[in-house]
Length: 275
Image (cartoon, rainbow, N blue to C red; front, side, top):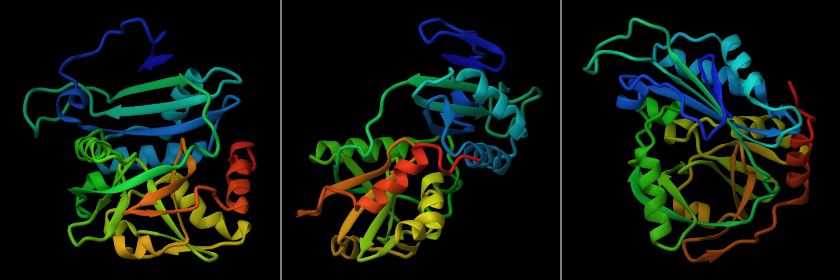
């Protein structure tokens, strides 16, 4: 089901959309994706706060309460799937600097699907496309995802499943659509935002809650060489939760996540960390 501002339709139906919308023409907007289990939006408050904050960073005024109403309206009771909320600056005149006169465009889409947990392991490869840590697109989930799309295409063409993106200095930032964690014994480390990592919701949640599963977690700059020395590698995002990495730079890794980590993620999915 899709909701566009206050209009609702099934996915196969066409809804009116202003073709001068800056989100469509200039990628002038932000979005958020969350996992829905049994009709519950996992870590809902964190997702809504991040989306409202990202919109504010672009100068788009939208209240968190508006987003919550939109999200609740589009998610069916008891459903499993993925929820995407999108906020654009709205329709506007031609030109980069032309501001809109109206309200932002708000969109919500719920896609029913059954997702495994943990998901199947992936092979990752280093992309030649670099992330710019000074860019707002590295810190906020903007609609501009060209670099990520091309990095993933490059990785798949080279025989990998996911792309690892580096900073201009050669430090690991994140994957094309996920954060990266390395396990060294009982330590979990993930690249800092200053190296170009997207401050993902599950990333931040795990940094806070890892101790409950017996792990110390923190930020640390990582090179590809250092990552290859890890005892294990896994990716995090709001749909995958934790996804093991089975191969990187010619080395194979244990495709099984630590049982304590799996249990922590299962507790999350079962509502143990609901707001």
